Image (cartoon, rainbow, N blue to C red; front, side, top):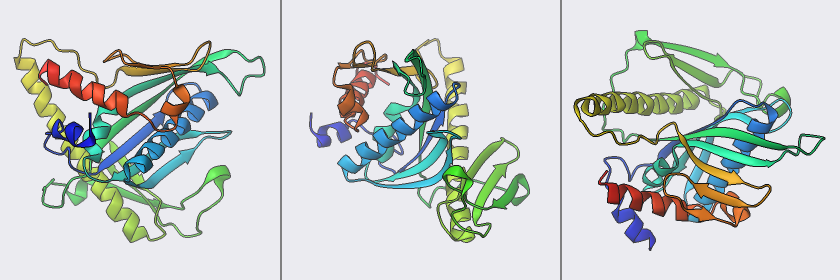
Length: 261
């Protein structure tokens, strides 16, 4: 299946748009944080293979290794259409490099993509509903990227949604990016509420994949990456972790097509 054929299946309202991506480490401390960083690398490598532009907006490093969470942009045609197929919980099974006893560990990290909304879509955001904080952007080990409070954190008080950006040296630019992300989050929240109301009126009990474990990456005692939604299995786990995930995306799109979603 060619890239053109795949994109023909991406007919959602915002499938052609850029994507805003969140990766969060699950419980498990350093082990899970290292897994979150591995996922970040996997998706950045995938985007590079696609010729997409990426920009890390905000990242919180772990104390020992890995990352606690990261927000990044993926810019290119159908970026959101592709990446929405990856939403959910990703599970890693391996011999821990942080365990002196060489025991096997299971780690979890979540991945969620949202569309970056075009400028012509209006999302009402009232100034009185926002709390805006500024702080110094920082990198691994607490070292400051710069000495001014250029990083911006915006809290939408009614929903509790928090977005932040520390990538740019200009506070103005960081605020603009954070507001764009907030617009997308609020838009998706309202869209999801409407979808849930429709589902509540329907007798169709289709399984919802969002928030569930979608894929396992097993590196010990054998190597296998298995998608639990489509049953696709790939035995070259190293290639998958190096960004070769199109087989899973294609299979999931076909899965949705056959289900009539």
